[in-house]
Amino acid sequence: MKVLKFGGTSIGSAAKIKNLAKIIDNGEEKIVVLSAMSGTTDKLEEIASLFLNGKKEEAVVQIELLKKKYFQVVEELFSENEYLIKGKELIKQHFDYLLSFTKDVFTRYEESAVLAQGELLSTILLQFYLEEQKISSVIIPALNFMRIDKSLEPDEYYIRENIKRELAQYPDIKLFITQGYICRNAFGEIDNLKRGGSDYSASLIGAEIGADEIQIWTDIDGFHNNDPRYVEKTFPIHELSFDEAAELAYFGAKILHPSSVLPAKVKNIPVRLKNTMQPDAPGTLITENEIEGEIKAVAAKDGITAVKIKSGRMLLAYGFLRKVFEVFERYKTPIDMITTSEIAVSVTIDNPKYLPEIKKELESYASVEIDDNQTIICVVGNLIAEGKGIALKVIQALEDIPLRMISYGGSKHNISVLINAEDKVRALNELNNKLFKFDE
Ligand code: ASP
Ligand code: MG
Image 1 (cartoon, rainbow, N blue to C red):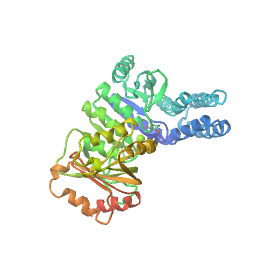
Image 2: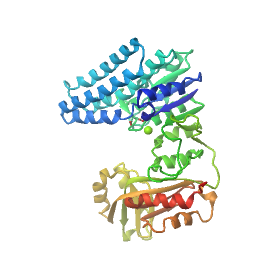
Image 3: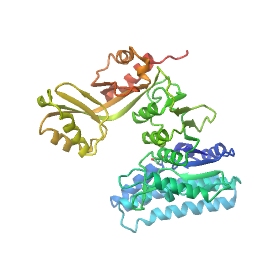
Image 4: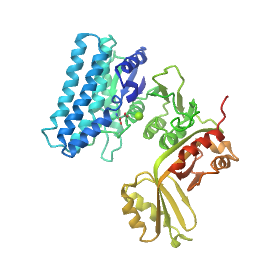
């Protein structure tokens, strides 16, 4: 059994849904995990926030706009009258539900229910279309098996037992469809795996059923060696190790949700990134295999804040770093990069929500300097095997760019530098020219 996840752009229109049906209709056993149609979750977030702020009339305007878009999709998707009627009835039901919130109080609980509508709609629309095409499939509802516990981590045992129970009901079915992103929480309420979480759903499902392969289908042919949004010449990477993929996903390559690498890695299930627009392109295969001695890719992560904590007390002292890290831990703020000198330590964070509190606590024993608007540039590959000169190459490529922090040796897969956000595009291009060979 394979798990195939299709992102919002892969089902962004009636034509794309038809294209997707062709890709999945090959007789192989599979679970198809769907996101919402592109733009939908953004819109639902907007609608939920209008409700939360008591702006009911504006919420209704946005609901009607989105509804219109879905009616158009239905018109283009189905050719038989029976399915046109079924499709329209489905849209009406879901949008009536959204409109019903104009009468009720609206809390965080309702917000999750609103956000879930995109995936609920896309899966049923696909299933109706397959039915119209006489392709047999079954929806296994994510809300029946996908669950997070009280610490918001996936409840693996629950997921495994319940997905197996769902699948066992249909011994003759080869094509299953389910919703990405949505789940239930420890209280049984509708919840979600956070934005972009459909990849994570696919990986969790793949891991719990012991899938042969997890495929993530998007609109690009896999991980590229650099960010195609900022660099003109890039190429797809055919093979990556789990660790390299995790670094790239975390440090800015938008193609894969960073949490989705771990479940696959733990169960050693290959992950393949594929392009719906070019289904025959090889994409990127992520496995435990490490290819020695190669720089694989460069990625950038924006929105980083650097915090420098300086104290004479750090000199020759032990326990100072623990004291510093405990402050970040108390405010549930993850640290990405760290560099130290004898009297100071610099760390980076990507979530500055509790920065004022953190700063205040640290200032009771150290001076604190904050630089926001920073970018981490990360170079990924099996870099230790590449051996001598790799750090030099990276730093030389960036010789004209001020470097705020450099991190090398934390793992063998990554060299990271911290720069001002305004230097990002230049840094990505310099690294592209100097680290990779291109066939002319
Ligand atoms: N539909 C959700 C989102 O837009 C989940 C996903 O696409 O992965 O964030
Ligand atoms: Mg995504």
